[in-house]
Amino acid sequence: MSREYTTVAIVRIEDVIPTSPSNPEDEWRAMATRVSVVEGAEPALNLLLGHAEIPNCRERRPAPRAGEYWVAYMDGVGGPDSVVYNAWPLDFARSLDPRFSGAPAR
Image (cartoon, rainbow, N blue to C red; front, side, top):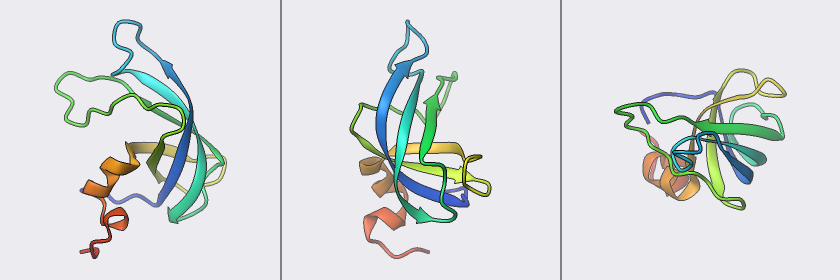
């Protein structure tokens, strides 16, 4: 990954709300519950994830489904002020982040 985050957590998607009726798979908000902390400070128990389609966006994310596990990447001190800056499905995060692939970190 090209950016370092202070906190990384596995979360479970609880609810998904499309934010664009014409583009529900590309623009959404999701409520998630923290399952475990992989690195950093303990974030809030409930986290908000989201994605808005931007022209020429290279980081397209599929809309999550309730019950899926995702990896949330955050900056800051954790706790109730946790802000998710990036999130990926756990299976996809395995291809990006060596913490989930079993490969040694560089």
